[in-house]
Amino acid sequence: MSYGLHLVVLEVTGRCNLSCNYCYRREGASVDLHDSSLILSQFAELMPSFLIVSGGEPLLAENIFTLAKEFKKVCKRLILTTNGSLVKEFPKSYFHIFDGVQISLDGDKQVHDSLRGKGNFESAVNAAIYLQGTTPVSFLCTMNSANYPHLDTIAQIAQEVGAVPKIGRMCGFDHGDPFPLSNPCTWKSTLEEAAHHGILNDDPLNFWFDEKKKKSIHKEKIVGGCTAGIAGVAISPELDVYPCVKLRIPAGNLKEQSLKDIWLHSPLFASLRDWHNLKGHCPSCEYVSICRGCRADAWARTGDYLAPDPLCWLNGRGEE
Image (cartoon, rainbow, N blue to C red; front, side, top):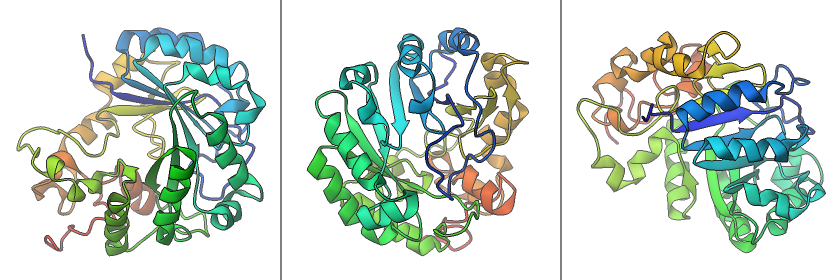
């Protein structure tokens, strides 16, 4: 039986060897996941389609590759996210266990190192080269005020090392420079340019540049868009269950409830699954079934996860 849990992001550690000021995870820096047996049994029951091993920096976690072998048994596809700095400390054969490795890359050498520290651009690129022929590699760029004009460079770097370029938005947690993008028109042009360069992204508003998605709208049920609490969850090392890694409102804790129980019965998830609960233009938008905006960014900027997406150019403006 399928319970509809498509995506799980599992933070195996809160520890990281970098200290990026725009990281969404700031608490529990020394916490590691200690009770993997509890999680494994619950994943086996729900069998998520994608299990993303994350952190912190997951390669700091003890016995990470041993854990990965167990995780592989309870999901359909296993992905590792990493900043790339520690990849070459392990035999490349170890990474065969993953169906893909996603490396953070926030721009060219100047931009990336200004955000993540000197030498980290080289580490990220060399990690991708090191893993060639071992497992598919992608670069994920978190778009912000410092790097959004450089999408062509990001695409070129990825092409040179055989990686797939991807982008995601920086949510408005207001940690300082670099700043999240705040102008909906700028975000629209960023998504448009990403599509032009063949750069992938799963932003809810990306439907605007995908005619196939536009044609899949449904009047009565969700068929795409933001996955928070609808098709995916995130789990912290403390075993808190969130709608997504950036929407850090606990729906429950695995020490007290099963993942199945939280997934099926959480009031928080129920509120996210009914688009009539959304505020502003969203509930009446013809694209609500394939979008609903980014709930994490709404929460980050307003404190209300049901508020309109702050980067939506359609919200209250009509179709431009």
